Length: 438
Image (spheres, rainbow, N blue to C red):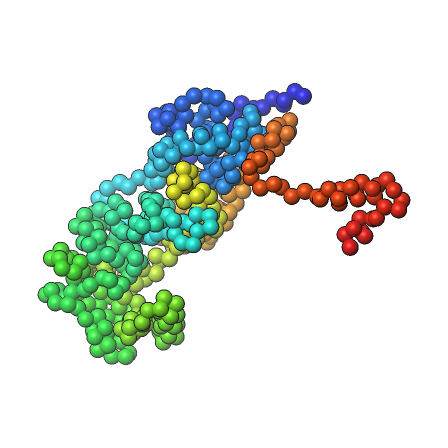
């Protein structure tokens, strides 16, 4: 059979490649991800292999079948060999896809910082941790860092300087890192946790519980000048503590959650912890004369946008579910390749739908979730190249996707059943299929 002629240029895939740096081809050779043209003839074709495995989560054999339908027959072992060489190349492609961070001559840049866990197949806990920095106005990711599960959340993972305001939750309120961040010129707004010691401006220990208990029951909020820094160190920074009393119903709900967590962990719940659960307590290096308590607390509530973005990544792209085995040869490639896929999808959405309609500093009529949802369908079609599959290659495709001899044997009909089915077609008194099923 004569194979149908194919358009040598995949225009849809070329459109996707427009989101990548122009030096894509040269960098593939530079990082020795692409050394010679054999089954995979060009760096863009190699990128397709990465996106099939990391972006679309196809297994190695499914990737081999997909590539076979697009051209020459290739095995899953060949696919794996090519993927192993791609990790440094894919890591190098990620930073150019993130927005540049120019120096700020004036004003502030508010960044929301958070982390997310990644689990390997069959895992009972976290195998890797994804650290993210989101611009609060454009809702674009500024920095992405992947670490193992033993590396904790910290502001040290990010490049923060003059003009930056980091909006963080309890996990990032580590005194030493907070002091270092402020020394680099950046401010921060963080939810206070019990591991964050506080001092008065004169250096004495700050008794938070006593301070709040002395307030009249009708007083909803309070601001106090404090110092923040690690215990046993003279390195401290001046900060403002803003505490807001929760409504009674919300306070009771928060205390119930505290009791459940304590009961689940087997720890004894302290009275002070139960009392503080009825308050929202935020600490910041921003001047309270300019940034009032109402402004700070209102800004902290918008921190939820990073949670929404992480949920979008996990629900639409399965970012939290590692395809490869933890610590395996393809685990790091999958993690970075999945981020590459996510950034390509986001850039494509912003290019086609416009950018500023989703900014947080104006009235918003829609979220990014629906546009991402639609774009994922386009990405699947473009990356897999469905429109360019060769029908004549289906036999070869099935061949490269067959089970290996040493793996489990696929289920078949028992020989006795097959014999009876053959008799049913040739003898009038043979048992019917209905009677066999009964």
